[in-house]
Length: 243
Image (cartoon, rainbow, N blue to C red; front, side):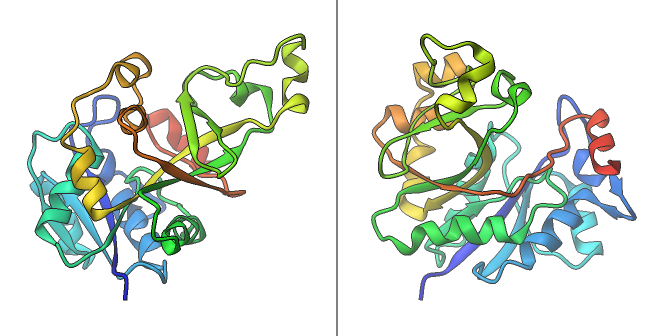
């Protein structure tokens, strides 16, 4: 039986929002809300929080969650997940669940884990069709283009593909555009391999770590979700929750 581990990377020292995992949202900390949503996912064998901060550990213990202490030097959630995977080698698939999406829908996690029914899948992520111009031309929202097997060809902060001989107002009617939903799944051996890679030129240019994987020949399967997620990156983003 395939064992799937959900990992929620959580660090205290966020540049834009220090202490973010411990902010209260409707009576519970954000990290507790993410953990409880992930635990509702039937396909996950277990869920743990990966952190390097004792304040987050204390909160996880208070609400009865599981945690793994990791190094404070990790540059990404992917690296933090890889350390946990090394400590828990009994798991076959690792799901990297964003720690700043307090109302993530378990259906999205289920959709991602379903990718790994196919044995040849190395990495997987979710995408959502863009239906408005604001998102389409927002450079803070990564876009993705696909091949015929629904694998990612490229991710960019720019609007891709470029639609020639059409006004920007009409681009969405000429071709489907997709934005990236930042939840990842990895086979354990692939996760170990990608964290040993040096940053690539495309990754540095776009500041998107998944480009390192593509540039080194790994394939990323995508699944289309119709569900929206709300990420809390700054204190101002809390207004999204209230709305």
